Image (cartoon, rainbow, N blue to C red; front, side, top):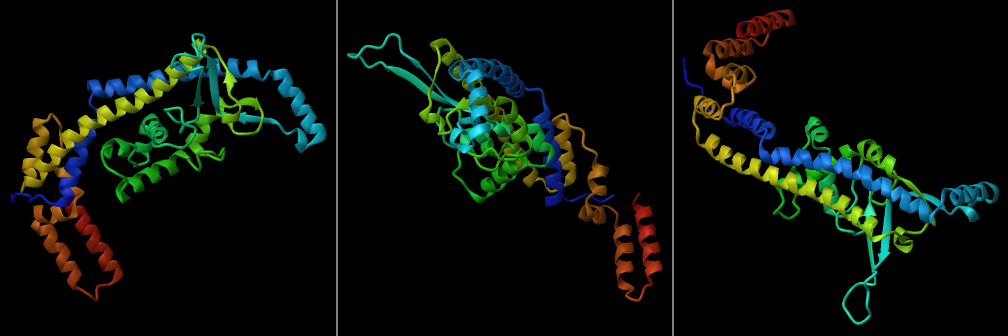
Length: 321
């Protein structure tokens, strides 16, 4: 039986199978990533419960109800109640002194949305997208997308390859516009529980909401948990990238499929050679010359009837199964 020469298609299939194993191994890095995501879910519940108390303390539910009644009665002049998922929380520094460098007031922007910032900025930033991709990694992978693109391209500037995958993931998540409530799909579902009633329709920067130092610290802890998920995702993907870089070098150097199969076996990965060949047209013709000859003969008969072509194709398919 003739040795099967390696080609691009076979290399890619072997690479994909081995990489998939790397991504599903129970490594310390992967477990740290999964634990960080669980912590995010827990901190979201705690932080939003606290945010609800702080916001309703500044904008009591009774006042909100009255203003909505006025809006219904008088229309747009009384349209001053809005739903929001991001807030400026602030507290006065109890140890502030005019003659030192301490801050009189600590204030920051906290965004509970899927693409919310991780630094306190109210503007769209890449970190919010990194969080979204890491949080919904499995859902995006199931759509044959690449949620690891930011981690893989961490040291690279924007480029067409990166932009393509980022845009595809954003679209799948339902991202439309950072300052818009028109997000759809997963983004809309994620954001829905975190909207609270606020009084005043201007930007949240203009309506800093007072909180205590302890409450502010809790909001910071929640935001740190989000940043930690991004960090753990980066660390995990870095380990996979290093392995995949070496894997590519090895597979490129191999001339025969048997060498790639041996590598997979040494890595503890079972690869079905027959399956690779059966699903690879080029590999199949090299592996079984009689099938190739039969196919070529069928191509020569230009005047063959439709029924004869169907029969020939059926016989060919039966010969390879």
